[in-house]
Length: 171
Image 1 (tube, rainbow, N blue to C red):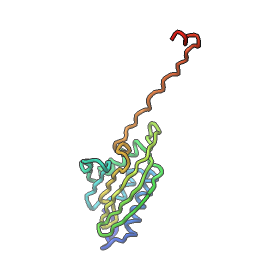
Image 2 (cartoon, rainbow, N blue to C red):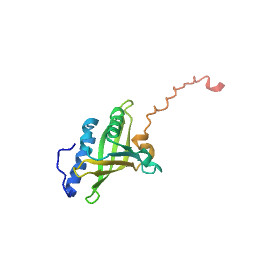
Image 3 (cartoon, rainbow, N blue to C red):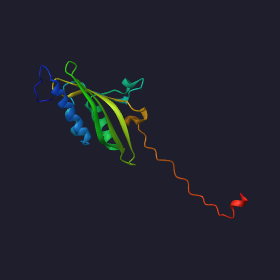
Image 4 (cartoon, rainbow, N blue to C red):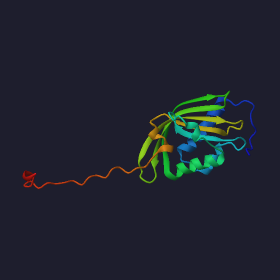
């Protein structure tokens, strides 16, 4: 349970501060257990991460703090986040939402391969400024969505074939 007292009307600055705080922790690869501090314990929590063009994005929705923890555990186990760049941030006091357009460079821990995901993150907040909705829509190619990422090794290089100069005539 949160120990802070709810405010009757959240301000735009309060919403922006809460979103900035979450994104700062994401950018520093804060451990999943500590990221849970940003999420509500008084309301049901929804988390979703899918390509924007996915026709069934809502099917990937997960609910509850255990789902949030599992999502961030999955990311922390396989990837590191780097170079999170926020391009635009909009807060709506009436809906208690912050919409962040941003990009992040992901790196596979195993292979060290990297790629960039462009996304829109919609954050919904409760009266305690805790996240109740965390929805990420990948705007770049669906293949760049971290939830669809596949770490395939590059094709092996073919060994160099050298042909003896005298044998070339026979070919």
